[in-house]
Length: 373
Length: 245
Image (cartoon, rainbow over the protein chains, first blue to last red):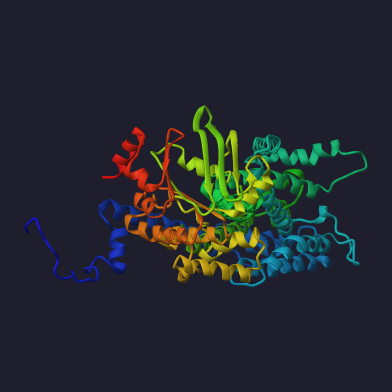
């Protein structure tokens, strides 16, 4: 070709050559790209297969499915002891909630699920009304239903609440309280007013510097000493308050990370249009900051959900606590009883945390599609 | 003086120890088009950002449309309402559609009903010739389109003064013209404009006065024919010889 050149006609647009697209090509490129990659694929595949078989063997093949007490499960070589789960499950869900009143937690849960489901679906209408119901009306409904004492509902002391009900009450309340509180703290930390900024920093660092177990002990044992005599705060409420404040400090830092990632030009553009500082924060900076923080915020939600198990140390029987307590029952004393109980606990915790994680991914993907830069 | 749009009287400003604006005195008449040029770091962006208080001056007085810019938050918000700004990096709100970008301030600041704000926004999106992009998000548009949306967004507040801070510097070369054309159109309608730019063709075409700044000072200010044809200060001549080849 000489130094000067002018194209006379366009080169044809063609599909990629065979062997560079399609499932076979994908396999070769990603799983069997060379001897090392092939060995790694086969090795990991074998390991995963072996693990899956072990789980299947214990939970299904060697498992005991029926029986009335320990004699069924105390068989040599037996796997999971499922009849123990069948018998204890209602208690794991409801704790020591009176038998005749268990429809109340069920109803509470159903109302919550019915209100939450449309909230999570982007296409469902009336988001504002829905959110208002969930955040304002629902907590009142839930605590009236669960606690009773009005409208002819017999009172049920929180000391009788337990199991999954307590886990969900603590986790949901903690999540709902810690997010707005964390946002306020994050904004406070960036405030131009030294007093607000200082107070926010002090609060955040104080709570982040103390282990959660200490917080719960303080809330349970020391707080009552400071209250005037005759005044008592419910133990469950104190644990929830401690957990929420603890989580809000971490939430504040997650949100602050998002706030810092929003470019300064965004705030300037808002101010230049005549929006007030608050309007700029609420309409422009915060929505973008929260979007950026979603992975961290959900990480904190998940951590909080799992941290609810620590209320055990102040004598509240959450899901794990009540499963643990059930293991002491000599009627079911068998080699695999404890493993079975903990396995179910792990499954339940995993189901909730995995759901949160997947929903967060779905939301991120949806927002990434609309709000591309 | 009712026909003065912006007045700088003995304005000084520092960034820490750095004296970024030095003894600025400038009167901009209503309907006047000013182009400000100068080497980077000469304080030209800072100068126009003082007009809507994105930067704070420490000495002297700035009076915009009869209102003095000082610590009075109310006055600042009043001034910002009537002063539109277009940024080098567009600064569109990426989480809002083009239409929502344009209606946000009219709805929340001017308290327009949504329907009226939408109609207003569409009018200005047609003016900048991209009404068909109204439902898209800024990230889906080209740089030139984004900057035209930014101009429409500012116009939706019906400003009396428009500030342009290097509006074409971040654009690919083939998109500069569409943005400049929009600005020329705006100038033709009698808008008061202060434009920081190195587009000297634009300056010749629309400016009433060209200002050259260096080291925080106004070095030379003149009508474009005189400014380009007969620059008097040595630094101005040097600068022009560097950018006009």
